[in-house]
Image 1 (cartoon, rainbow, N blue to C red):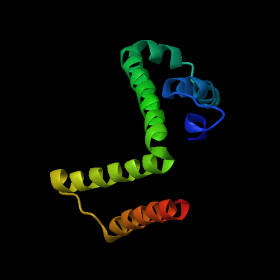
Image 2: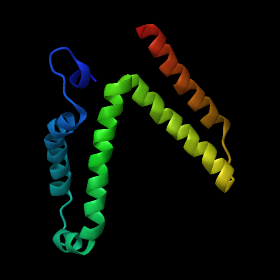
Image 3: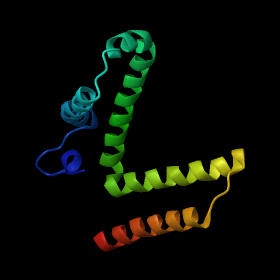
Length: 123
């Protein structure tokens, strides 16, 4: 949030994504090196038509996340994620007949209360 809307360094979401991408690549390369399999190049050739759209969607997701954090703050981003999780659980109950446990309800309520308390304290 500081990099996107701070006083000294203001980056737009696309520049922020380009700023963060090399560090993400380094972490992914470490994971790739630690779990290397000689069949990876062949698997890449077989699956490139799935990997390319997946990479494009990941890029769009990263730019979208940076935009949301810039526009509504990090707390707003966390709150949006919690609401998304609640909607997914409620939708799975409605569509698939899943059972929501008391622990899930209490956890969602506690998380929402925590976000609201943090916002109240910071204000």
